[in-house]
Length: 220
Picture (spheres, one colour):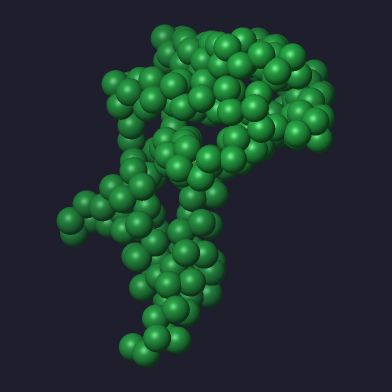
């Protein structure tokens, strides 16, 4: 294959990988679901090749497992695997808070405040889907504006894997409201430009998120 052909193939594989990632994030594909190559090929109007390549990349990212002679499946994460990832996320998120105090513009803090207010409306409407997407945007905005590409990369890898588990942590009654009350405290600490307070608010947010998620498992 020539260089142009290789580049086209690589680009198509990246597009397919992102599409499958989004299907996992949105809940369209759940843990344990089989990746139907034929259906995806028809949906995207492409051959199976880029789908297989995308699945290999997603396996390296911890989102998919390939089973010999059976195909690819959305990874099923154990509670212990999720706990380990939450512990790393807790440390990285605290660092995000410290860096934001130093680097975030007032406009960034205004945007975070806007997202908190939008999430508050989703809470009142008990709209989990909207809340979940706004919650992702809130955290992604913070990480992006911490202005540390290495941190953003490591954080992103962990969060992508936690999508296999995280959504259920918001399902229990009252969890949306509790989660957003923590967001309010985070923004308040950032506006005060208090690094230790912001780091602790974010650390506690992750700890509480883990406790909410474990609580839903105990209820089920």
